Image 1 (cartoon, rainbow, N blue to C red):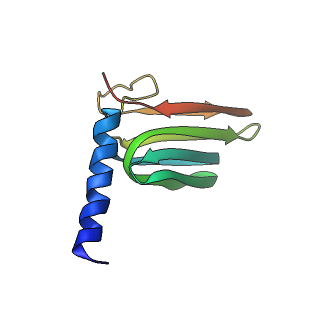
Image 2: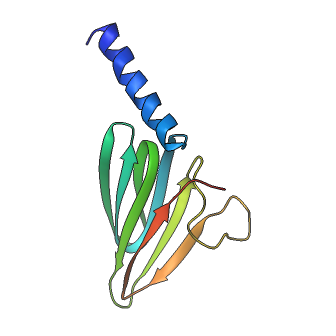
Image 3: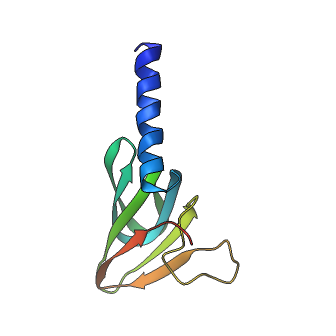
Length: 124
């Protein structure tokens, strides 16, 4: 790939971020327990989908995206199970859950059977 092509890609990514008024942010969401989390992120390069399944208590999986402009996540938790969702890294995005004890903690425990969505949107 030539330098001109790379410069063009970087210019397009920057232009998309400026047009939306949102700074791209890396996102990292950890799930622990039982259930699935599927997220769709809008990036300067287009739509990116990530899915993880937590299968048992004590183990964890992580959903990650780089340079996200926005995101929407859908969760499913089986009956009589729990899924703990914690935003580990969110850059410019506001916590979609009620903040925890510490201001930097952004998490929720979902009791099953349950399904729903949450959005990652610009803070402010």
